[in-house]
Length: 518
Image 1: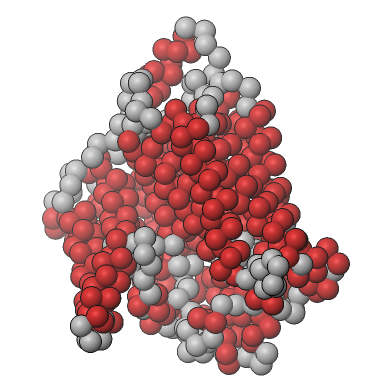
Image 2: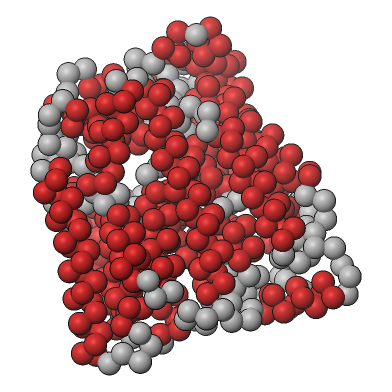
């Protein structure tokens, strides 16, 4: 588990390198194409990205034209959709031109992360407005409210903060560490929205940097090529847009969790538990990591008695740290009640959500309350997820511990009634470091990335309803359709017609590499 093993991909790379083949073709064109795509996102965000109602940017002539004129909104939508899909193509092409996943590939990947991520640092928040909920929650604490007991509606003029209305009464589902970050950001910026967004972005970038550092390290522990794992994860457009452009706190959560997992796997369990506990104190979903860290700490030859002892030690140490933080901030463990908030929401592309919606529709058609059987379906999904997690904890080989953790977290994500794009991003680094084969597995990742990028393009746009006119209407529904069609056409081009990328979606002719133990 903790010793590097030779990977099939690395052996093939070494053979190729010995034959005198260059590590990769010139990466200039994919890097430039991705940078242009990211710049398109930046410009498009000026028109359809999320701004707080009190933002001074709304008064600038350029923003007024791009947000209040039909032509400006249309341009923003096209730039957003084309830019996002250009990023997808650039990422695919960057991986496609690599012959040997060595130092050249690592250098090109790091350049891609910087070149593609830098314009996103200055985007108006895209694809989500959760960052404005962070600002509202930080303001709650600055003004002396308990965010676990009060929604942002407790604040005066709360609607000017720009948060989604679902947060008006909802308790905060975040842990103690992120509450402190929210409070510090809002206090230091005096609730200035653009400055607050930038500071939250810097927090997200810290999480991205942690992923860049620890994804290759974790991959090496599994004999997986670290440079390929880094490309699959950090240069991935879904990763960059959700963590930087959308400003999600999930970046810090998963970065801390990966760091903790690495130290736990290299016999530095105390440090690992502290880091994973800090991750839980950002967003508690990573509590799933703790039983597997206990197994790593117990060691390869541990019997059941030893395993239970180290599970108790792991859980006790993590609980002690969380309790200490709860005592310091005085808010306790209120995030536990906040975790139930998303449970009643469903979405059509989540398997459990779709089944629940179908069952609800059938019940409604017979005059019954469809929410009741839909709730049964959602609860069944949760119970099945718990069963999968327990199975992965108690059954399986020691050498597959991180893969078992990956499958456990995947069950929690995939058996939920709603699957957000950033939930999928939690899984990508874990699958990458434990092995994504270059057969159907990597093709599935390509499709998932393309789907969620297209969905994100059309899902959350700030488009004002008063733009509806007799000759050319850009109400929200029409804007979403226009964005979705543009993104979908580009996606179909990548899969079926692009002379280069269409080959990635066909049956692989070469040897299968990066084969994990499944």
